[in-house]
Image (cartoon, rainbow, N blue to C red; front, side, top):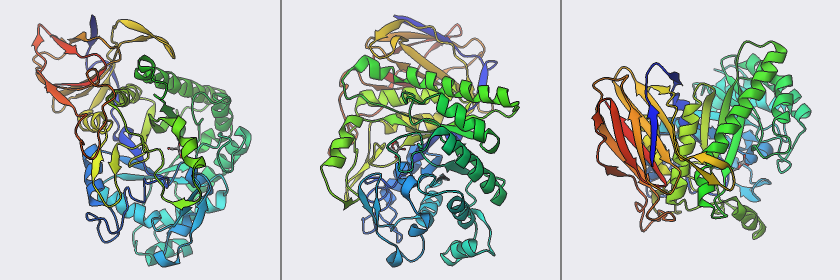
Length: 499
Ligand code: AHR
């Protein structure tokens, strides 16, 4: 079976923004406690930041990290997490039925972000709180000094403002599960007023309004329209969240998950542009896809129901398979293909909680299968994203109907002459992919790296076999007469490098 695509630098979409390779640290399960932070761990620094996890975060190539939630932020008092550790209160976290010790808070996160070399992205609580608390945390974080809260930050050890540029106005407030859930009108008004006031404190920040928690929400579409009718003027991004659940074992459908993400992005962009047209805005909003991943969601309720109130329980620590890694690679392809309208994307979450990085308390950290396509894409998607217009065989799926077997994007760096083609084969059969390169005379194949789920689709990485699912090198692509012909295995994610 043959598929084809064309790479031509004339067909550019947008620069491959580093912010598309974001992640998410929530006070949930063992993402913070036992994940990024574990005082006493053999690799921890004096603050308790795990060195082995920091090394993996750097290798992963994460650019921006959203914090502190998620559902957690909708009941969070940010000031509980600052000041002397011994004075910080223990609180009930209603989102995850957990005792929050507050030993890790805003200042620890900022230190962690600086050490990891990532950009912090903060969320404010618009569930149980409102305009004033959002202004307070912004003053503490970004105001240089000479006011009560900025001087408190200085007293707590941070002389310079953290200068956080990206702020989320709450989290998933369309969801009935959210503490402080709101109607679209209630949330839209609150987002507009909070955003307006926050930009008075610091006009250099960018704001993200909550879009829908997922595309299947009954209010999807109408929620975005109503929220933006109130808040378009004040915000820069509208968020999208999605998780794809492989629990039913329908391999063809899960491998086609990116088809849904693609339509989701197009729906949100269309809705935002509709409001822009009605209100005569020339400035176009971007999508902040600030939660996305594979997640075996059906397991969560049982986890929560089974237990009482405890500190940092193991929550949704899914073992990702080789197939899940192919799906994650394809979701990244989709985000890149929309680089003109998606400005931020955060895989959820970073460590343990459906994360690419797993740890045991006191023990090792290892790379899950999904780590690899993320790390390789973040490293090699440098330059301008190009439109590739693949022509592909199609196959039927139960969830999405007929889908293309081949999904592709290409990123070209004019300065270095490096070209990376990302190609996903969503079908079970091998494909011969013909890549038209006539617009880049003299370009030659450098490498073909594949993460191939065909032979052992359910394989996972464990502390005993941490590299069982890893990428492998195939023969480098040969270019003949301006065309590279490459065999891509069934159910695989591929990076084809040319220079
Ligand atoms: O990432 C896990 C949870 O999923 C987040 O807290 C929430 O925003 C989403 O529903």
